Length: 529
Image (tube, rainbow, N blue to C red):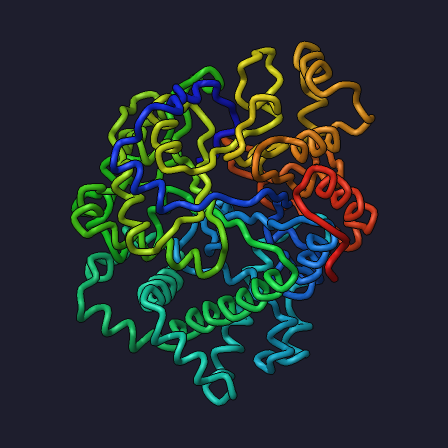
């Protein structure tokens, strides 16, 4: 899921005259080819603002305006769910819910759902790092205030319609309320009647925790309302949102608690195998993620309904979806649940094209991006290409001296998404500081003399790529070093907290980005607003 290493095993290319199997032709008709464009990667928690972390308030709208002025047609975000252990967006309490930390207190004051005095008592922020503990404290206070006020508010009918029309909400709000009542204990450590969803036990807690349940429902409604407002503004400025779907979900999540039959669990709710990736050149012990594995045969028997619901919910929020760890749809690495690392795992078959056929038949053309980094091979490339999905190329992985390296700009294909680096990489400036001379020489041979700013050298190379889509992390736009790195895979602490400062992005950045986008056919004309 968080692999920061390249692959050169991109698989055999199908010859132009070689026929596709019928299933691949059908799958290919259910996917979307993207127009030539570019964008910026910035997770909303990293937006500036006066509170403990970024949110969906005025700074989010201002960032959309920056993108539009800069000729950028994409805003890429990380998963938007409520975060759990380690504050990672990839370890969420729900694959469906929104993160309550992103709810804007300022927007709630505008709507009359929060008083100015309540807003002013929230934990302050505005520095260079998010404080997620303080943000959680603030979100709980906001949830209580909104839940107490909504019943008599003019927006009450809208709230009740949201509650009635959101199928996953009941399980999520109940799960979170029970979890809170048990001091944050994971669901498989709850009393047996609650762990096993005994109807009488659940009915009793619905009564005893009614206020707490309503607070969680209120925060999901406010998140949905604010996100819709932000997305509408983005669309009005010609900006689309590229979201992220982690392939696996957290064990301690409403998804696994509510649907244990869809996961490989024992009678006590513990995983019989967990997710990871095997040892390779970059990690002698592999990566042990610990997520529960899917019972793919159960998903297939139900027509992949859970996955269809999940993707449909996400596509209500975003315009395109990056599928994390695409290799897992071909095969996944199953590790014994008590293993100390990933070395003792084994490969198991994933759902393959059948999943995507089911998704496309229910949802129509699928605007998906395959995150195909890591130790992939011909079989993974075959599924990606037969589906017509764009894969990913990372420029930081391009300059190892191999002229056939698929990440080299001259080897890019049109149906690709090119990055200077991802959220799992060091910033380009940090990468360059630790690069060896051979790697530096290869870069100079491929890209020519440096401008003196390696981050913008790679941005220019990405903009000029044949690939349809180019994305740069905001840290590279700002030419920041390793101090601005967002995540270091394998390091459980110190991640996800980097934050943009007020006024750090300037009109000069926008002008420079727009000039490159115009030069390389990724946008036309002057700013629209």
